[in-house]
Length: 342
Image (cartoon, one colour):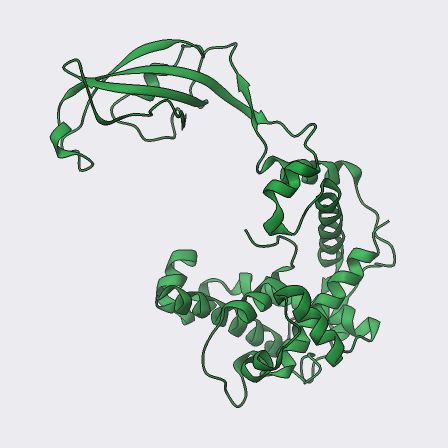
């Protein structure tokens, strides 16, 4: 998994830098409408955006604890319930061996490795999982089923009666997050950039701080230039995914959005585009209010942090200096907000 902590506009920007490809252009699409300093040409965001006070950002301890536990739960072991009967909707860990005419058949066993199924959700033949209802973990029972006709997975089994000797190992409960330590985080969250529980908690606090300001800002209007640039970046991002996957842009748009082309995406997802443009406007307003500028050292530092190499000339040639500075301005605003947490 990629790092979680990036605002939507930054995620689009960084994904383009790391994933997109293509021949350099005289005026790259990504930099069209931007100054070399990364601001929108002719647009003063503070004319449209009223920022909340972000001199200090107070956190809600309950929300932070909830978010932290959610993050920890992503890889946490689940409670193993063994003292009640299985019911509709339960997730179970089971083992089974299938028999036809008293003989075990190939592919009809978990091999003692256990498999996780959810009654009413997981698709098994006939009423296999329904027959587990009312039985407790530790029980072994015969599950009698008939293979359907046709049965493309194995035509030789079509229409045959089978008995699966099935053991319920446990009912899966909620994730157990109490007592999870730094070793657990280091083992499971390296790709997020976390090594300790504190790293993860700091991330949650920082994300909360950013969302507080983004949600609290008032945007009276989105200039068309900002809307167009935002839409172009989004399309470019999905096009990059298509190229890297050997697909067409329409295939990617169909997969994510159910539309076949760029025009339909712009029309059907205008609100989504505007929500991303709104975020961009708020970030530029913060950059304007703080008087942010982007130096060569800032660019080197950003690329060193995000790509492991401070060299950025090739990126500048392909995407334009304006776009690179745009990304770094957003990053500066992001880090400023995180620093204001109390």
